[in-house]
Length: 210
Image (cartoon, rainbow, N blue to C red; front, side, top):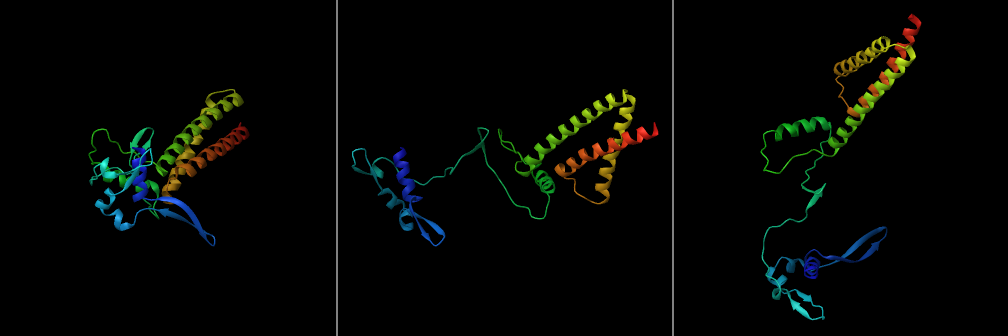
């Protein structure tokens, strides 16, 4: 069966026999049937296959040639069949495009066993969001721990950490006033950095006022 499929594939799709160069450009030399022969099912039936003993056997002696639909390729991800739909949306943010696509597909009824998932930029952004969320939480806990050790108290660190919440409100307000898109990665990194600066300034003020 492999030999039969290989012979037919070579006859119709062709196979690269060699290459030739013209200056700096390299071109494949593809061997296959003429276009008129590839489009004529009767001529395809006349293809001869090579047997183990070298004898030539016509294709019609081992198969019936008919037209039918079929899958050209099966793509899988995590051992599951997938069909990928992609597009370029120049001049638009990924979040905006995703919102439009989600709204269009909201009432689309999928057959049983099928699901829609968003990959590419959205998948990368989701991974970055999860990482930054964990990093922000860990950084807050570490800062709070060191503040407790520094002040030997729990009340003072809680008051100082409250300034981080105020800084977050300021960040969101600034984004709204300037009509700046909320970028998960850049904004998240900025918020984490800002939190450290705010806590440092709060410690200095607390020391001076204390």
